[in-house]
Length: 121
Image (cartoon, rainbow, N blue to C red; front, side, top):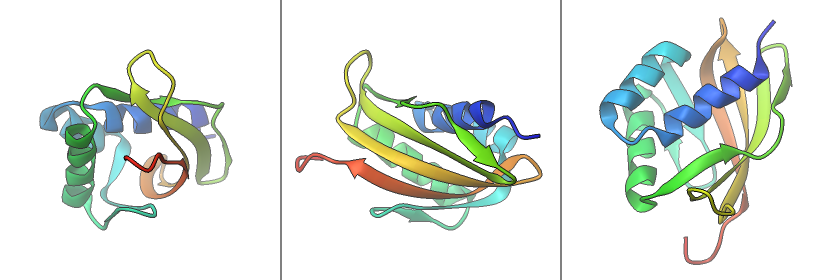
C-alpha cells in the first residue's frame, strides 16, 4: 500500500530544494525517470524541464517555502493533497491542490490546480 503522507512529503521536499544537487537527488530517489507535470501556468514533459520549473519557482519566490495544508489521501496509484507557498513561518500567499499518479510507488505525473493566486504573483 502506498503511503500518501510520505509521497506528498517527498513531493513538497522536491519543490523546497534550494539547490540543483538536492533537486536532482530527490528526483532520482522519488520520481520516475521521465516525469511529467502540468498546472495552469507551467508544464514539464521530462525530468530536466521539471527541475527547471522547480528552480524557476525558487528564483521567483526567494525565501518562500511550500507546506502541506491538509492530510494527503489517495487510492490505487493516485495521491491528492493541498499545499501553500509563502514566506517561511507565515501564512501562504499562494495555495493549490495537486494529484500525483504513481508508477511502482514513484511519482510519474502531477496535475496541479491553483486555488489562490494573488494578482501580484
